[in-house]
Length: 171
Image (cartoon, rainbow, N blue to C red; front, side):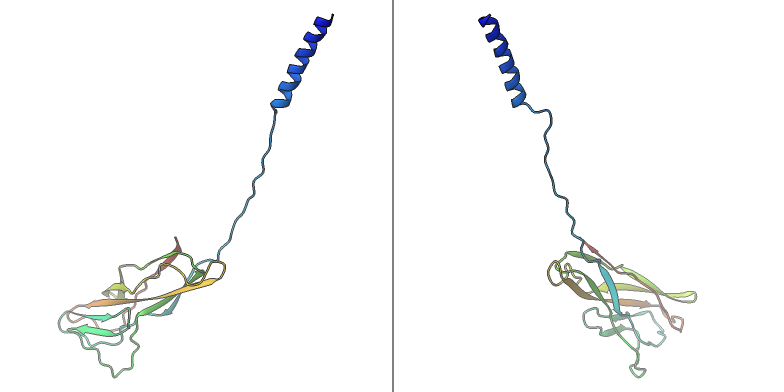
């Protein structure tokens, strides 16, 4: 009887020890988080303006420098007596301070006057790669876009206009 009792006690001990060592379930916890940053915006501060030029008799160009807004010409006369605005396009990007950004400017824009057109090759100044400031605070960056308008010989007279879009995005 003692032997049978010890055998049953040994089996119960082993079964109890095994149950204590292996668990059927276990849990762990994790945190969830999100940080919302400021949206990115692009604001136009000035349009690209070439001013008033005389109808050329031979093909030529009128250019506005992105960095300075200065106008230069080749085979084209642009009188200064009209007090027309001559300027590079100017933009401001606003968003999360210190954020890395990419700014994209199209390579050209077509300006139209009825059925006539002028192709403008756009030239961006130094494009920003980040916004000023630090995370958690507003940041901004500015840049300019100039261009070169190719005028044909006897380009039709009249106002020409076109629209181009710049894009800024967080990296």
